[in-house]
Amino acid sequence: MVQDEAKLLHRAKEGDGQAFAGLVEPCLDQAYRLALRLAGDPGEAEDALQEALYKAWRALPRFRGDARFATWLYRIVYRVAVDRARKAKPLPVDDARLLDAAGSHDPAAAAWYDPESRWEGVEAQRELEAALQKLPPSYRAALTLYYVEGLTVRDIAGVLDVPVGTVKTHLHRARQALKRELGKERGGEGVWTR
Amino acid sequence: MRAPQADRLTWQCRAADRLGLTAEPPGGGSRKGERWGGLLAWLLRRHVARCPRCQAELAGWRRIAALLQASSGVQAPAGTLDRVMARIAAEQDQERAVSEGPRREPLSLAGAAAAWLAWVFAVSLQAAGALGLLLPAFPGLTDRVFALVRAAFDSGGQRVREAAWMLQRAGETLPPGVAPYVEAVWWCAAGLSFAIGVLIVTGGRPGPRRE
Ligand SMILES: [Zn+2]
Image (cartoon, rainbow over all chains, first blue to last red; front, side):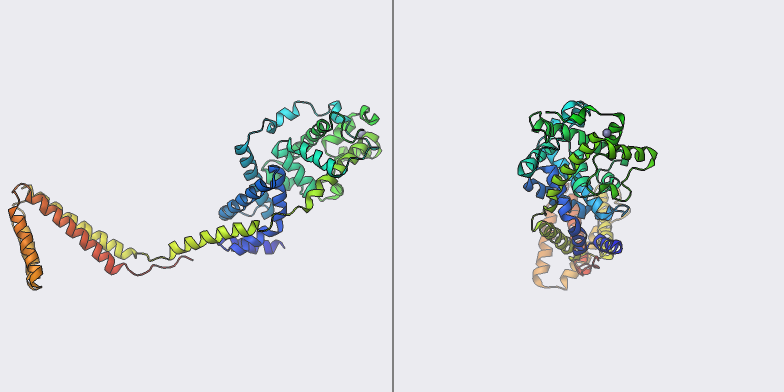
């Protein structure tokens, strides 16, 4: 598998478009889901993904192969999606400090779980997505890559281009921020609390 | 209503939260290299297993993870990769067309450049002669070159001969101060024509293809 990737990479670097497509195909859906989570809109996510794929093709000769190709591609998708979002509409909520300023263990966040309630289905999905969209892109990306795509902390560090310790901090803060935002989405009730 | 467990938040609960031990995705704890090692993590895991608050937290995050993973079946829109590949292929075709087009061989370019430089040198000599600076050193140089050109024309057809005479007569009718400059322009144009001719004759073949 790794050898196949190395062969495809070698051919793609020499200008073989089919080899490049062969490299991209296995991680295309994951890359799209990351773009979708960051863009929050399917059309914009597709545009961001196409731009990222084209940039990856142009940057391929500079790819040294010290990370997995998928990790390298996700990093480009992440940068492109964040750049596009920043150009489209700068959101003050993207400032991580604003979210962290509220403290990591406020009562609204602490009271979020009630085992008796049934928080699920389309409504729960909608509330979760709404809360996610209020998080900074780096938090959103970290949560998505960790919980949806099953990437390791080390791989996420490669995607976000930050140290492993920073990813752990991102994940912790992202969880606290998500709990707070979910609490707000639930009208201050706390998630799953009826 | 607040969950009663929330009130009993101990330092172990906070530490377990900080290390993500209460928020591992289903099966996440078994991912290679993901488990937090060390004595502290071991003790905290024991705490999480017994603490109602941490169990509630863990169950909450498993629910969140499950909801998040509901999006894991989302696929990239059909044709996304094809559109990018089509753009890449079109660019490759364009680049290939440019690199495979007729290329001048370096030798012919160098030859043309040398011929042109020689003509520029000749023209500058003429200009210098016209200004009277080098007149004693190159007496009658222009006349001799003209004589050669005329001789070449003489062996050609009547029209060429007439054109040459007309050209010379035109030169003779010019005012004395202007003639040297017209002569310099004529030589320069002739030199350029010669260089272009060399380029066309020797440089028309396609160059090597770029792999
Ligand atoms: Zn606890």
